[in-house]
Image: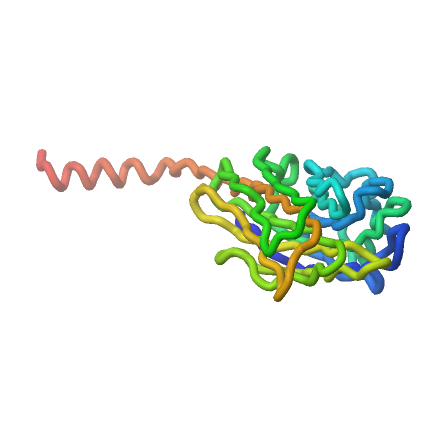
Length: 245
C-alpha cells in the first residue's frame, strides 16, 4: 500500500506557552500523523496533545537543538484516532512554539518509523542548513524533513532540496514564536536522501533541522484458490490429444 497525503495545517504561534490549531482540520481517512515543532530551547519541552484521543501516543524522535534558541522535534502518531475536527496542541512553558502538521494514509499501523533519522543544528547565522543523509530500509518510504529557525534577522524558508515538497512553513516572529517547516518526499527504491533548507533573502540566525523515514503498510497477499476437481480431467484429455494413444 502506498503512502497518500490527506491534509496538512499549521499553528503560527500565540506567545510563550503553546497553543492549539484552530480551526481544526479534517483528517478523516488518514492513519499516521506527523507534527513538526519549532520551539525556543530555553522553555520546557513537552509532548503534543490533541482533542481526538491521541494524547499519550505522540512518539518523539531526537530533538535537534541549536544551543542558543531554535529547537526542532518531529512527532508522529501511528494508527491514529481520526476525525473531522483535529486540533493538536503544542505544550511547554516559555517555549514560544509553532508547528506544522501533516496527516497521511498508507502507513505501517504497528511500527511506521523505520529507525533512520538524522539532524543538524547551528547556533550561528547561516544562509542554509542541511539535515544530513539517511537511507530508508524499505521501498516506498515516506521521508519527513523539518526545520526550526529563530533569532534576530531570521526570515522564512526560501527553497528546499529538489524532490521534496514544502507542505507548510511558519515564519519566526520575535516575541511570539520560533519558525517551523515541514517537507515530504515519497521514495521509490531505497536510496540516500537529505534535505537542504535555504533562507529567504537573508539568514537563519539559529536553526535546527531533522529528517526521518517511515514505512508504508505491507500489501495484503492475494488469496489462493485451489483448482476444482473437474479441471484435472480436462488437462488429462488435453495431454492425450497432444501425445496420442
